[in-house]
Image (tube, rainbow, N blue to C red; front, side, top):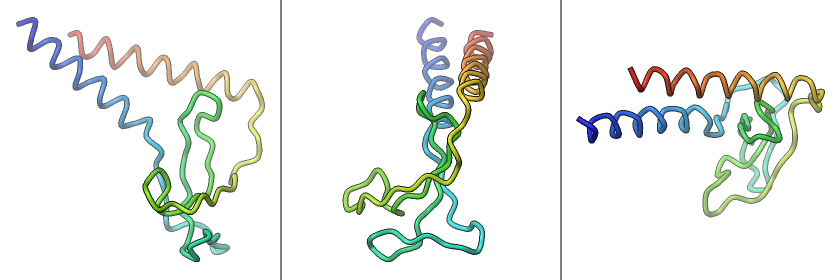
Length: 103
């Protein structure tokens, strides 16, 4: 039974991690940005603590071998209060996942 519970908790944790992976969009507003490979740069969403929810442009190969290093912010800098609220909401989501996994 403990093995099943730990397996379930691990699976729930993995779901939270997947939600926090940088997500990307390839189809966005008409003014496209291009990386140093001359490919359309994807628009990504960052989920790190310093920039939660901030969108940026990066090489389609971002976070992979062969990425060209192209980077540009899409969003204007968030106010400190917005970052604080987003972090709190993400923490609340984590707690809800943990509670659900322990049911």
